[in-house]
Length: 104
Length: 104
Image 1 (cartoon, each protein chain N blue to C red):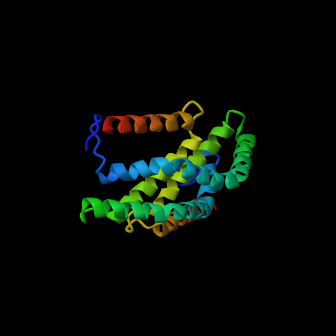
Image 2 (image 1 turned 120 degrees about the vertical axis):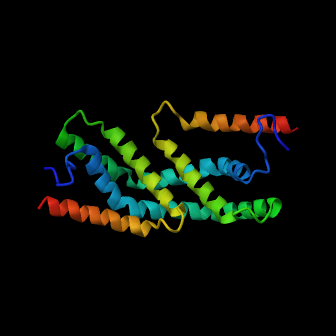
């Protein structure tokens, strides 16, 4: 049961990925709908940054980078239970407090 | 305006990321709701794989890996316009056809 490409269809990862490819357009469309909700806010923020820093700021690129980063961080829901997102949120809050204390 | 940590708050990427951190719990919850829709299908598929291949298959891990992969591929919506997702979907379909032709 090996194709000329040398891929085994009985390999668990391969067969699951075939399903993922079929579902991907629907999953991607649903995730895009999620991000579209937050887009006005992200776009306003990037425009503010450009207004404050200067026109050399690529506002559209900032929005794409942040959108990409937000989706990347959403993957944490599938991490091994030992890397809990609760711990990471607490670490983020701690960094915030440190920044604010340094700047006071 | 530099904190003791050496981070400039006027850096565009830093200030945008501060916003992302604030929004992340909401974005992650919304993306989790999307994935929860597809979970029964992914879980059934991984159970089928385990039933067919053997109990050494870690069905839960397969589901996590595919969920992670699906979210990763959703990031393509933010890629530079030259890497269009349409081209990638067509490439996936082509691989499908090749696999099916090889196996006939």
